[in-house]
Length: 91
Image 1 (cartoon, rainbow, N blue to C red):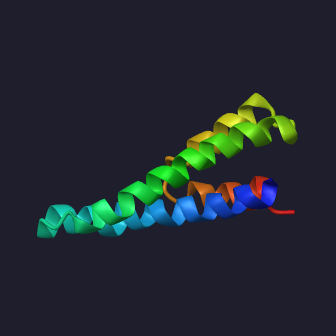
Image 2: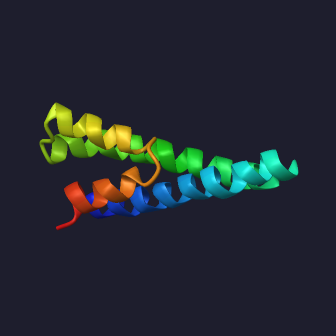
């Protein structure tokens, strides 16, 4: 389960960065919403999967409440999931 969460974490982080730094500027600077539409749904699914897996792993790995909150908050901070992978998930 931890390996799956690591993969989802990295994919979620990449999709968030693409959405935030590529798709959104294109939408507002060029007026083309195509990239937001293409990247939005996969990012949303990865985000939800990240949260659900974090909840499951909270109990499997006996994360303290503070650790769990940090892991959840990292999903809404750019590059946050990469920090989580390095600090909490890497073996």
